[in-house]
Length: 156
Image (cartoon, rainbow, N blue to C red):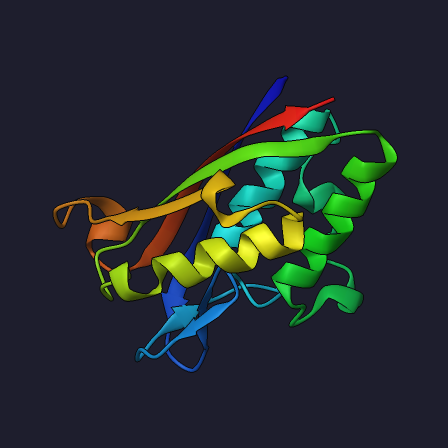
């Protein structure tokens, strides 16, 4: 077993879609980034890459490369899974925590987990996605951005 931790953060801004775990959430703001800025999927990818000793998403999908402008992060996750498969790794489980004051994410969490599980080729009970507010504290609490912590276990 190998453990990995991923962390990502994106600023909230008007004029962008809010996509988390491949789910588009209706809200007045979205996440700013080079790709679709899916902060949840990015943190999960970083956890997986870290557990495999393969660096991070910036190394594999640099924001200086126009090929990734507006990219669907679930497609990037599929590429990460190919890299893991080539090295004989499979996902044991993933646990992720979204830090966001608003909007309320509870209605969307199950679909986020199912989307991630499908791309990773595991059953949905191996992917846990949860959300919490930060009681108005910090950049996530003030609504300036969202952050995600993700951990995973890989099996060799």
